[in-house]
Image (cartoon, rainbow, N blue to C red; front, side, top):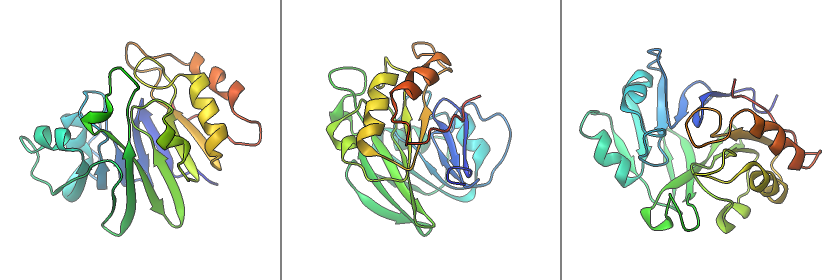
Length: 208
């Protein structure tokens, strides 16, 4: 079923199809099976070098922002592709697009150039939002599976996230970025989010 190939280790540490990783964080096991690692920005809970080392292999390509590349190149020798918001690209046969990920007036400022990603796998579009509010850019996203933060403080809150889902109308919504770090909501965010999302839009809970 749609979304069965998506795993969340915790927070915003996401893996799709067992080999496409987003913001690896608190990955303790040495998996070393990543084809591509996508990094949204350089904050500690999205760029953790030890976790990245546990998922990459020799030919893994890392797609990331400039601020992330500056940290990674000190410790990792893999190929790095630097991206900015509003770009399209292809790596290892996987098409991707970037969009700006930012808060309005706090924490993640738009001018920093942080991103979210939409990738296409077997004709299905997966969107990983990164740390962001419910921006006008996000409201225009066309996607099948929307992974979006609901923890508040550093991102949109459950109410805002639910309203965004109702605008975008994905085939599946998966909440992220809660229950793991200080300053974000815990498991209570799930029910708050689900109460707002229109009943015809499926929601899948993957954070344990």
